[in-house]
Image 1 (tube, rainbow, N blue to C red):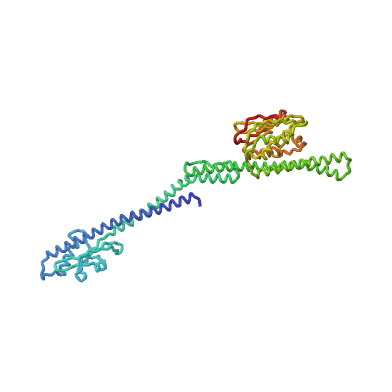
Image 2: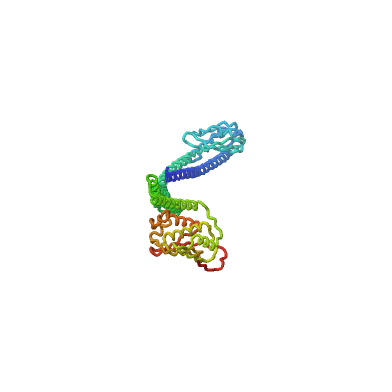
Length: 476
């Protein structure tokens, strides 16, 4: 069942109960008030008749000093008409509660009379046929006799008015409920419009349209719910876009990985098959074995770099206070100037907060890439400078350079600007991907400044820690 229908249904149930109970209370209150008024009038009339009877009895001449039954009947007959057009219904009974006089139409039984004691008045409401009456009873002291006077007052009009009140109120309640249903349908449609819009938005998103947003049509809690839903939808769309990008990146990674494996494996298989299937002279055998060795080393380097990336992503960096001098001394011991390449080291002494092993890995990869991008005899500069933002490491080469359109892609796994040149030097395009992953653990990133034919300057900044040592510029 729709929420709007439930809203209308429950509203109508509450309205019906409210109108029914209030109508019953109101009509019944009017009825009780009118009936009480009629009862009081009947009791007053009984008192008046009793007083009139006693007065009339005092004015009657007594033959034997006792009020005779015939005299009682005569007085009762006079009281019945009372000299008016309105006829009263009454009954007079003797001391033994036997009827002495009964008006025509007085059909009441003796139950009330039997319950009436001396000096006591009583009443009850009875029904006779289609009519309702108030029956009253009281005793009359007439000279030396105690008689009982009963009256009947027709109060059918009061009960008729109550029945009419119930009938009118029922009709009014039904009309009000009908109009209430019509009005509540419009109100329910207006109130549930935000829910319908949210439902539509949910279906659109379930169908794949993650950019669909629900329209805000109110400023209440449902309007806030719409805003929260749209915020959730935006976060969901962003997450889905990220997942799609990750899936695409993984597919590209798998494709690039398969391509990178295919070339060395093809060479290894081909030269191995040549050595296996035919007898070669010493020079060709050496060349074939050298090709196998070279491609094998490239596969080894690629697998080690992949392992480093996986370990870095899953592992935790161990941050500590590290001397920049120790980092540069370690790198200088590994990359010594020679005939093929000249290395120039310039750095400031300071302390940084980092994982020294991981930062050394970054510097080694940057220097290794600089060597691959440079011609023999070129100069490679390694610098360390203190700045307000932190401590900056920079590796500068004067090699082939990187086009601007390629600079955003070089940190992707297996991406190489010059593939033939990189493969010839056992490159796999994983070094900068590893560097980017390590630096992200240090809340840093690679900063690239390069131009084709002019070389590249690649650096990063680490947060400084502790008291800096003497600001001494060291050149090697």
